[in-house]
Length: 540
Image (cartoon, rainbow, N blue to C red; front, side, top):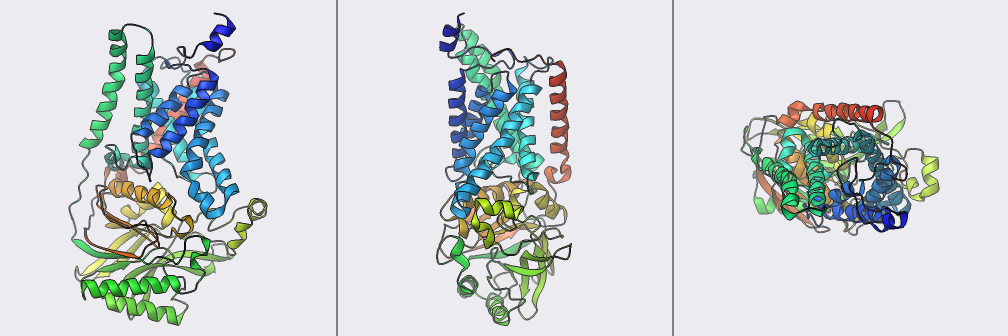
């Protein structure tokens, strides 16, 4: 075949992965379209099947046998995905940080594609689509794990698992958490790409259908398998009468907390109005969001009086968010993001401090360098330090005659696997996700976070309440069903009697073992691919 004719040929079989091998230009188009489609699987659209299509297009785009080329292709896919997916970062901190974060996250996707390209060269699985699909899915979840921990503590946004909260794969979270759901999603995407390849190849219709049948059957089997995983919701240790107050702010954006005491007053007023509606002694605990008290009542008598007034009206303790100042473990001045339990007449009786402050938002790494890209870094005058205790707050409940441990992860902490698992293992019987989304305006950030809370509910078998200063807030059953939710930038309250659960899921018991095993398998596959794989063909 002449070079000119080869250039005009749209696809040809890839001898390395059994996939179609598009032309270079078509490969780039597939990558960009795939990234854009994958974003639509996440909230706000939540078209979850498009995660299979979007990642499947990436699989087709990675059909060539060049690790460098495939890294470039995957990087473009990553940019097409992350730029719209975390558009809220632009709304909160500006264009340059948004672009930098998107480029960095896409870079990890690109590295994963290079590892995948080398791994699949291993001779023993090169022509075994089922094993290749498992390998691709393993590489994907390991790359997501890298994004969860690196750099600067990691940024787990955009994990495939968070796109599947309305789909049949969600119950897999009870088996091995977010990695299991992401694995199943990536595996189905790979199978879909092979199905398309089988139907596109030359041959009789009968031959094409026969070749396409195994991946089609496997996709159906995986989707059906998710529906077979039990996700119990029944109470095991009584129930908790919960109220959640979304106080709202006067305007979206970074200036939402400029008027001192406004946010605190909003939550006090909302709590008093709720108490009048529900009646006395109707509640066991009132949940306020992160930063719901813009003045720390542990250091301000007027703020303390307002907390006492609200707690007295509700006839229940209030769990609320505020900041405090002190010293970190190195003795340096630091700020802490706290969730504080307040009991009328006693004041603050317990406090949990956020363990993973958000880099470049709550603390500024490499401040002098970061300042060159955005002067907004200087809005963070005192860096936030990490707390040292697990996210469990014991709430005394007189009706039950005992304290009820609540798992209280703050804001972005809901995206990190280990923190919430530690809370469940530490005795949490219900999960609370207090958050402050005022800086993100009307973007998808808050709904993306609600999807994460839904996955965590299933992963740990716990009813969950996400409560935001401005929305979206929601009450979630242990099977991930949203029982009640609020809208953005409106004052609102929610009440529910939620089951308390003590049993541990398989995901809780396995802990980090699944991702640890996946990492070992990927490293071994990569090593075998390097040692036994052939070199890329010239011009591939």
